[in-house]
Amino acid sequence: MKKLSSISLYAFGLALVFTSALLLTQPPTTALAAGCYALCRYGDAVHVEGDTCSCTDNVGCTFTKDGKKYSAPCAKRVGYEETPGLEEGGS
Image (cartoon, rainbow, N blue to C red; front, side, top):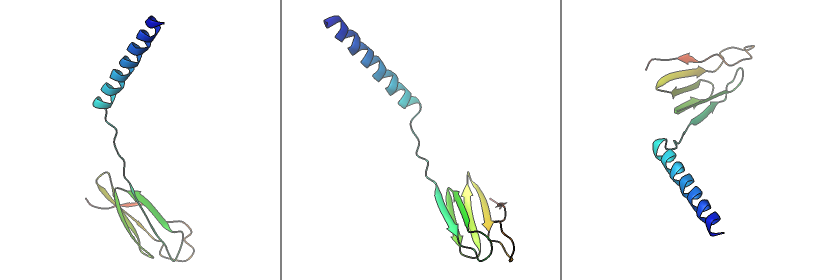
């Protein structure tokens, strides 16, 4: 019985060392994302997610993702059922 508990203790210690080494070489990262939306007079509401974002109702949203700026405008006329595509802005 003493030999079995020694082996279990060594196995636990080895697992602890392996886990510690893994956490030290690849620490966990926190991914924080911002989410915004704008209500549009025509078409669907605009929903965006990115590192930062801001929206204005009946205008659209602007946001940054991976260092690039984007905009997602609201539809401009009646009968346009879909939200326009994303437009990349200057950085």
